[in-house]
Image (tube, rainbow, N blue to C red):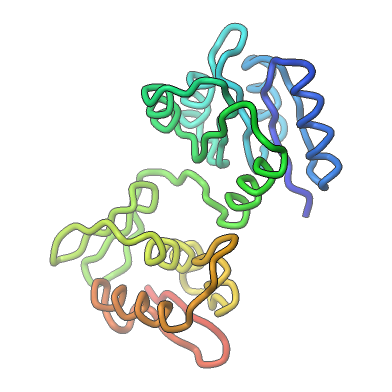
Length: 222
């Protein structure tokens, strides 16, 4: 399925370069130059990923994304900007972005970052927790697991594993899909590490919550 991209960049030359490169790589690109038109696009065409400049005419990219998150837009977002202060970086993530790419940049790097987010299907989820049973609740957006034993922030790979299983709760997730989610571009997947993360999660949420189906995959039973 072709991924749909919202490109909000007001520099005409850079806008055209990015749009053409993404289209050459199989993306469907909705290109706009201001936040007002971007909001119209998202209303009519839900996108899979957002590429946003910060310095824009009218509403800034920070304010635009914050507004869209409030409106229920869950797609991952990358800010593409010349701003480089730590305060700007912090403001961007507070607005709801998932990555930050400073100008100038290589188009290949942009593709790698986009593909990583799309591969992980890292969508901003509502704050409501997922009841895992046994007194455990998982808050995916905040990486917070609350159990009868206390509150925990999971290590990155345990988080990705539990998030994937929670997204597909009650369904079997193949071992290949699990490994693909937990280990990103350039990393070597480890069966031993996977077993360790499964063991640690079962200690937290209950031995019977995560079922292993030999030769098939895993299932989160609620």
